[in-house]
Amino acid sequence: MMRDPYFFDQVDVLKNLLGIKDAKELEQAEADITGIRLLDVDNACESGQFNLPRVLAIHKHIFGDIYEWAGKIRIIPIVKGERVLGGDTVRYSWPDSIEHDCISALKNLNETDWSALGVYETAEVFTKLIAALWQVHPFREGNTRTVITFATQFAEAHGFRMDKSLLKDSAAYVRDALVKASDGQYSDYRYLVKIFEDAIRRG
Image (tube, rainbow, N blue to C red):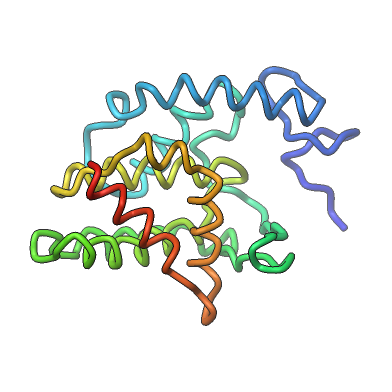
């Protein structure tokens, strides 16, 4: 099996600009740095259309101090065993399909008439379209933070502001809900709809 090129040669830790080779230490450093970068991400990535370059720019802004490949589409397939799927993985996009799948998901988001939908309908439709974008998983790491940041920016620009603090405080729930909503024919959208609806009503 080919070694993951994103890892250091001798240890199973993502190569990073900080030179950290301990997984726990990198996890803490990443949390600290991205927490700060998220504070001004809306100002840094507020202009332009809601397209793939915007998704890449958000990831670059959040993770650019940690990973050389921040803002770049991943070059390998990935699998992640998920507790809420009984150890199975979401079927993420294959590397050569990522750009196409992102553009397709974003096209559906941009072509929806959000002004015609009530709060629950908005949450329901937004859930399915954001889950489709998240399932692409364009990056080697940092997909949830990037997609949720994009989602809150998109929502505010389209007239249904979301309570970002609720999503942040419920980060583990949000990720699990995204997993459940990205399980192919077995996708269960209820959990993500619930927190998106709550975030919209509180926003």
